[in-house]
Amino acid sequence: MARIAGVNIPTNKRAIIALQYIHGIGAAKAAEIIEKAGIDPSKRVNELADSDVIQVREIIDRDYMVEGDLRRQTSMNIKRLMDLGCYRGLRHRRGLPVRGQRTHTNARTRKGPAKAIAGKKK
Image (cartoon, rainbow, N blue to C red; front, side):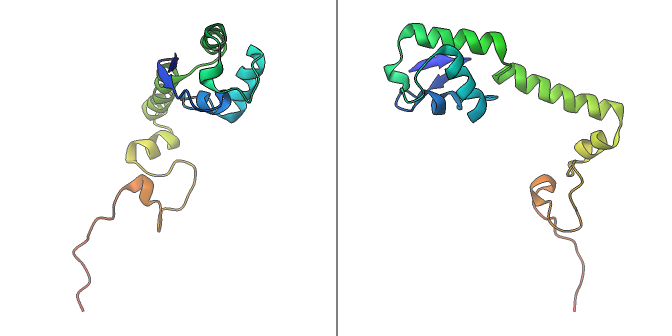
């Protein structure tokens, strides 16, 4: 099992698919990395030579922000918005949708489970 960017990559999958197990690498970036490394896209991870794995690891370390660094940057961006006190920061702080979605109904993912209100008796 190859280890790239602190993630164990599944060996039985194609290289493009296996790279997507790394946080911050999707389909487009995985294809770009494989192309830069000069690896056949249909090759599986267990068919790759050690030199190929090392080359992929170096490309990712040099050109892309992944895993812990990316998570840290994302959380710092959210924290910065909250510290500024801007509208988006307030929405993050209150645990409400940030991008203009309605909240009268729906938005349960962001708000959490419905809270029972002592209310209407017939």
